[in-house]
Amino acid sequence: MLRGGTDESGDVMAEFAWDPERLPDLSGRAYLVTGATAGLGFFACEQLADAGAHVIMTGRNPNRLVAAREAVTRTVPDADIETLLLDTSNPGSVRAAAATVRVRKSLHGVLLNAGIVHPPRQREMTRDGHELVFATNALGHYVLGGELLTTLAAGRGRLVWLGSMATSLSPYETDDPELRENYTPWRAYAQSKIATTALGLEADRRLRSAGVRVRSVIVHPGYSTSGRTRRVRGVNEPSRTTRIADALQSPITQSKERGAWSLVRGLVDPEIQGGDVIGPRFTLRGQPRHTKAARVTRDRATATRLWDYCESATGVRWPLERAARKKRR
Image (cartoon, rainbow, N blue to C red):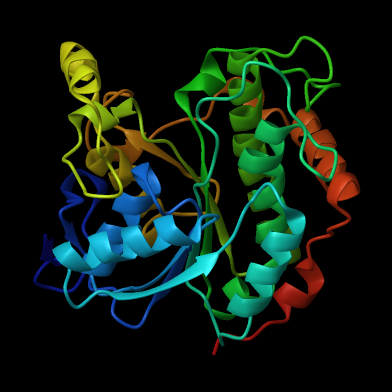
C-alpha cells in the first residue's frame, strides 16, 4: 500500500477522493482492535500498520495472536505492533486489558470489531449469565468503551462500532435484548448488531452532550467473505469448497481486505464526525462511503433503554464528566 491522503495544499481529500489504499501517515498514532486474529480485524490491523500506526492487536487465544502478529510482519516488516489478550465475552478480561492500555498517555482509536458471526444453534450463556452472542458482540464492547473513555479523550480518539447489513433485515426485541425467548442463531446475530449500532449512535449523543472529545462512529463491511480473500497462513485459510462457493457469489461480495476499508476509514479519516455511518458504496461491496443506519437503530427511545440495560447488566457507568475534563496530551 502507498501512503498519503492529502492533496498538494495539505487539505484533507473530499469523500469522492478518499483512497483506502493511500491512507494518511499514521506515525505516532495508536489504535486498539478487538478480534484482531482473523477476518476484518486482522486486515484492519495490517492496513493501519502499513500506514505507520502503532497497533494493539487483541484476541482471546494467545497462539492465534502470535500467528496474526507474525502474519502482519510478513507483509509489513517494520510494523509497530503489540498483542494483548482480551475476550469481549468476559468482563474481567475486558477490564484487565483496559487497565493495561490505560497506562498509555492517550489512545487515538478503538475498533470494536470482535464478534460471533456464526452463533450456536442453541442459546448459550457466559459465566456471568449473559447470552453469549449479545455478550460478545455488544455488551463487552460497551464495557470496553467505558473503561477506555478517558484514555481516548486524552487523544481525541474514536470509538468505532461494527454494524452489519443484518440490522435492516430483522426486527428488534426491545424487551428481550438477550433473547431469553424465541432464540435462533440468525436472530441472535441480528439482535446483537442492532444493539451494537444503536449503542454507537447513543454513545455519540451522550459524548456530545457531555462535551467529551471522542467521536463515536459506526461502520459495516458489506458482504465480505473469506473465500474471496487472499490466503494468509494461520489467519485465513479457506477450503477449496469455500473458495468455489464464494466465487459463485462474486458479483455481490468482496474480500475481507476490502471489507476492512470501511473500518479503517471510520478510524482514521479526519473528516469523519461522531454519529457518521460508513459502509461500502454499493451496500454489499465497494469503496467506503457515508451511508445511513437502519431505522430501528436510530430510535432514541430504544437506544436509551438499551444503554440503561447495558449499564445495569455490567455495573459500568461511562465516566463522561471525567472524560470531558481530560486534556489532550
